[in-house]
Length: 322
Image (tube, rainbow, N blue to C red; front, side, top):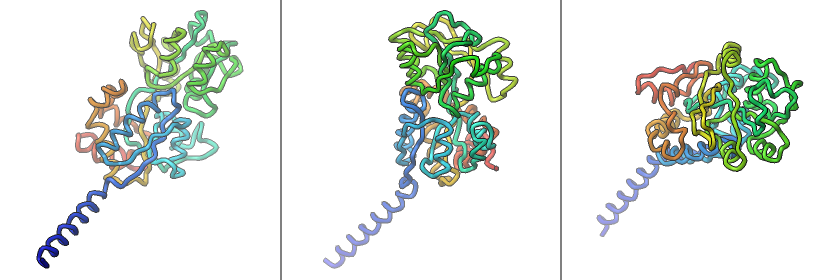
């Protein structure tokens, strides 16, 4: 009897040790800052959070936020451990320029990887607006002050020879822009997000919209003035009623992680995404843009060493030094 008790005790101790060992990487909890509920960040973030939970054993909670700048600041404050940000905005945050000029440089985050193209989309229901120049004197939503959309809109306007004084600026979210346009309160709006974007799709379905081309000399000037932009074409059929491709510009959507995150955890998070691109694509079209070449193209901000280890195993070296 005593022998059986001893054997049972040994088994219980072994089970306890195994359970404690298994908790090593699975004990992490992370808050994930995405974006507004009508944008790509929020929908896509929810899917990625589930994959990170399933395959990295990290309890990731995706939450709606004000977007890139808020996510960077929230990582600095320790409220978030993950967050989406455009590559131009994360550069401003690291360098302490433009939208971060008053707050100063932030170095509490690292890049996990770039995920997809953040497309500058200018849309309207007004058939008389056919170019950026036609926005003069019009009521135009240009994003919340200091937001990534706001800076992208200002870049486009500036290179087209316009300023906020030449339009009637409205500082609205994606959802508010959609509703305001539907109600006839604005003439056009800028949205910067992966296409298709929910707000535009809904409006195109119910009311009909058209997107304005940002191309030719204007696009060339924008890319020469601000090198973080590249040319991009929104394919035919991306939105209901869109029977022609739309020429525009784009930056990249990056996934950031706290610099303080454990390297093993970040390695697992990176693998959870890039080892399951096909499955993710079935749930969100943006998954089709997941690839290691795009993921590793940031040069202005260092990568987290955990992500760097994953990329190194696939033959790609990224910078991890400040």
